[in-house]
Amino acid sequence: MKTGESEHRAEFADSADSADSDGSDGRRGRQPSGPPYRVLFLLAAMLIVPTALTLSSVEHPGVLNVASDNPTPYGYTWSLLLFIVPVAVLGSWFARRPALRFPRQAFWRTLAVLVPLGFVLDLAFGNAFFVFRNHGATLGITVPAVGGALPVEEFVFYLSGFMAALLSYVWADEYWMRAYNVPDYRGQANGLVRFVRPHYPSVWCGIALIAAAAAYKRGFSDAPAGFPWYFTYLTLGALVPSAALFHTARSFINWRAFSFTFLLMLLISLLWEVTLALPYGWWGFRPEAMIGLSIDAWHGLPIEEPLVWMAVSYATVIVYEVIKIWLALGERAPQAFFGGGKA
Image 1: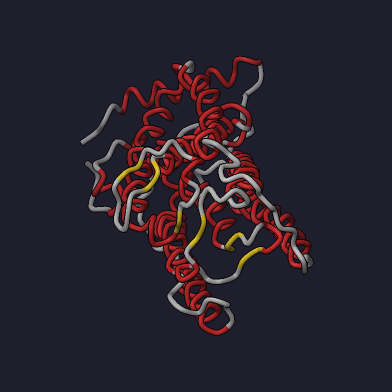
Image 2 (image 1 turned 45 degrees about the horizontal axis):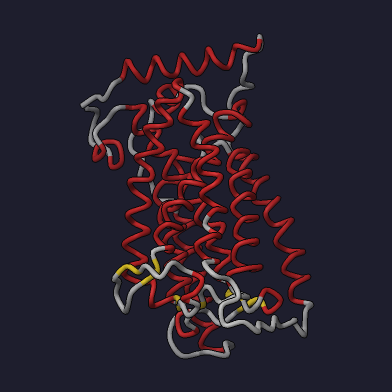
């Protein structure tokens, strides 16, 4: 069953017209998909490797001595503005662009997939991975969950975090780096038989990473009891979309726009977690669910957390782009994702 094909065609035309309004073609066309994402990975490595070497050189990390029983009243609550303010600014820009109705449809559908999934996972596993001892840093409003109540700020974070990551990508894709996005989704996706196509390197990489994490925890960690469930959860959360959808999404992702989102979320997370949350005890981590490899110079931050900052942006963008392709083709979801003929 087709869903608004003529509307989508009109929106593609509107987008092309708006790109031509400055007297140029507005786009340089789709560049080959290989070099952009490889360059992005190279840039990430260029930052990560020297950072890791520098942090590992710290043998005697400083310790923050906090005299007050409540050093950051409502600190966790206030800190959510790091996500809410970008959402408000970029959301206002997005809402005032009628020509972007097609990306807006994909935006809301992406949130409808990711936010409930984040809520369910936090309700099921939040207490297995985290502890929240600084009650003065929150409003004191809690949500019942498996293993005990969780602060409501956790769920505001999931909502605003996904929205901030997605809006930053949409803004960069549709405005800041528009020259590198796909001008005609229907035309480029017309030959796709199905969206779900296994990317076996991602599968084998995920299996190898989980096995290595378990081996490190058992053989080298200071807390060998338990299993690295948090890392396993993150690996599956990042690699399942990649393993299933990377082949389909990679030529549609605006990798330059993604690099903006990646670096923005990395910067916010560094400021939020390393300089505020961990030093002031807004939340902590259960050793039995971690690998046991921590960054001492960053207040003992588990190595899993930098992976969260990267994985969230990656998975969010892949899901968003695949939903855009699905809407552009106008096919029923089972047929689009798993094949079986045109509607």
